[in-house]
Image (cartoon, rainbow, N blue to C red; front, side, top):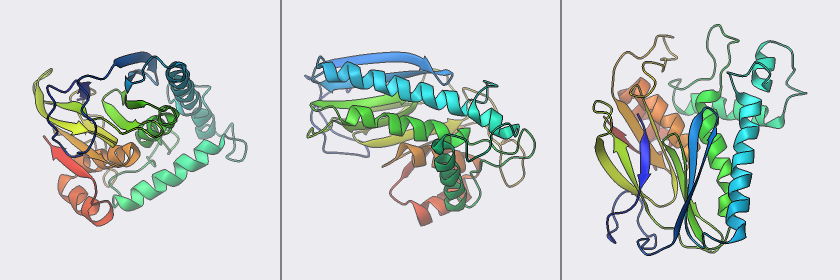
Length: 263
């Protein structure tokens, strides 16, 4: 299950976030790399040939590679894996580990336990369900420092959009894939600023566990959430996929500015 950035079909404005510049005539450029085990693409509009753009994209990739060095569960030498094996203590670990751990605790509180980083076995701690959204959102700050551009950073279908310094943002048309029909678009929306994330089983199968029971969620479908922050959109997409009813109640009580689309 994924969401993809596609160009707007025309000058009309629609979707959850309105107010961006019309984008059909603006110069465009895209950059792609492979990091954290997935393709990540940076899309920019506006002053795309300014040297600051390539510099910022290089900083984005460097930041994400650093996150992978620290938090990968596939690399035995990552700090996360060393922490889980007891080979590294929290005092010696990179400060990002403490930041992420506090965010995971807050996510568990906000979602009423529908999101967690604490699991039985395998070291008992896995924050990677939050790390991607957190990392991509922080990485996008490098693009936000570039004047004259709007941008959309896409990490395997989780998106953050915004604009550089003193620049009005533009809308990015996002297609939400139908989880039951690969390659088909079930819905689309315009993302101007903020983040969008999707959780489901179409791409990776049944990999999402219900923290309350420890059992894997055994249904198909997907949930897409968008709002001011990719980090929290990602957390809420997971929570609503685990339990749509309880998730909606928790979302309404804690983060009503976020919207969701359930398939």
